[in-house]
Image (cartoon, rainbow, N blue to C red):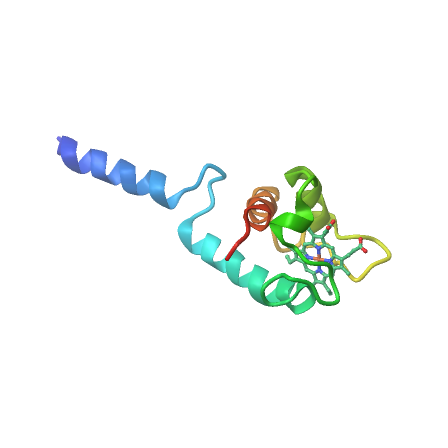
Length: 105
Ligand code: HEC
């Protein structure tokens, strides 16, 4: 029989390492690295703008998370903003959109 305290502890660990979107802690770190380096190459290392517009909470106020998620997944045709669908799942893109809206720093 499993020890009840240990079981509770492992459940806690499990709920900590998996977010509501089911993204593991290590994948989240990868996604934040992608945001900084890949997205940052156009949007600026601190997302304050460059070739691409700033991705700061103030600038994205009024733009719904769903809209930002769709922009990340499908890109913007006719602009340098590329689609990230080959690299990100819907849930991962939505998670990143949430981080950007909150302000990642
Ligand atoms: C090759 C350059 C480039 C890269 C790399 C890039 N973007 Fe963009 N992004 C742009 C440009 C340019 C626009 C503006 C498109 C337009 O004119 O509507 C944009 C627009 C956006 C917008 C819409 C902003 C708004 O105010 O509506 C979001 C959100 C966004 N990018 C997120 C990302 C994320 C997240 C990544 C990384 C996963 C990323 N971008 C990588 C160039 C880039």
